[in-house]
Length: 197
Image (cartoon, rainbow, N blue to C red; front, side, top):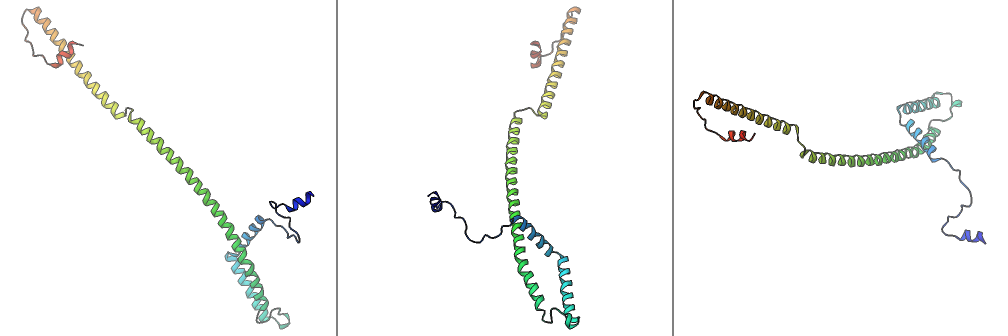
């Protein structure tokens, strides 16, 4: 009963009946066909084929008639060359198909890598833009130099004012001691800054 149910199930393929064909490894057959296609696509193959055909012609035209195995019309040679061509064409096509599959896989891998590199490049561009924005808020070397130069000038001016003030105070002190009246210079804005120091 269980056998009948199994045989009637439509979601499983039937087991094949009849003659079973021999199985072969398609990868090994493909490598073999590529090897033949590579050897047939070389100059050596053309030279060797030309030599074989030349020897065939020479033997079947120049040898004694009882030793010739393919007389003048060369029917057997034509059959051999036709068989070679009929097998060579599918083998070459198989090799080309395998090469096309490899090229397609390589192209997909290149496309995947290019996509990953593009994403990495975009990420780095965003990071560099963020760094530029952050550096816009950070003092640059030129800015620090200009600020230091400005501070140095201000310090020089302040020290000159202090020296002038000390000179005036010394002059006032010496004029009081000598009893004479010192000439007062007009005061400017700089002098008022030094009083606060």
